[in-house]
Amino acid sequence: MGDLNRHVYILLTDTGTLFTSLIKKYTKAPYNHASISFDRELNELYSFGRKKPKNPLNGGFVKEDIWTGTYSKYPETTCVIYELDVSERDVEKMKRVLNVFIRNGDKYLYNILGVLGVSVKEPIEFSNSYFCSQFVAEVLNRSGIKLWDKLPALITPEDFRNNERMKLIYEGRLMEYGPVKQKKN
Image (tube, rainbow, N blue to C red; front, side, top):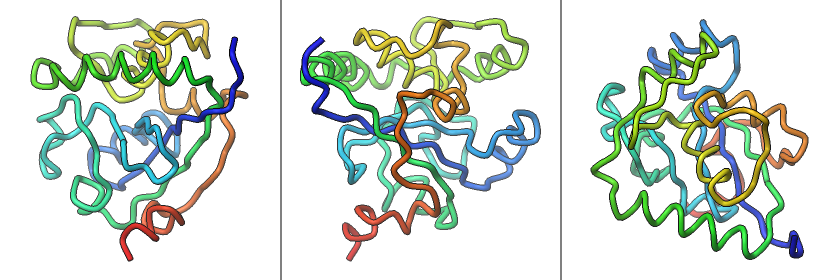
């Protein structure tokens, strides 16, 4: 396993929307959305979520942009950011997996039933259909990074928070995160 001198970043967020408030009531977890980035500045940020900020039901694969996307509509969004040590080869594999999602972006759907499946601890999987933390876990998994002994379809944002390989680098308001704030100015 080569040198672990590269990093990927896992961003967990809470936008405070009605949709996330409902999920939060159920999960009792502080963050209910997960994204993955290849840079500390979160320029390359990917997830499964809203395609349009105002519609939580129109979801799918998204390249998220903090300043123009959904987060821009929710400036009070709180978050935690974790750094995961990986190798150069891991990053190459993840980018290959991600490119499949990027190329076929419109074919993917948001796995709303999968979210319910997590709550009853039964994986509900459809081809080309993911929810946010399932997607992040899938990208890691397909790249050979096994952080859990359960299927990606059962992974929640809370599982990232509780994984000992995740190194917490920031907690607070997303718009106050140093590298993001500098980018705006």
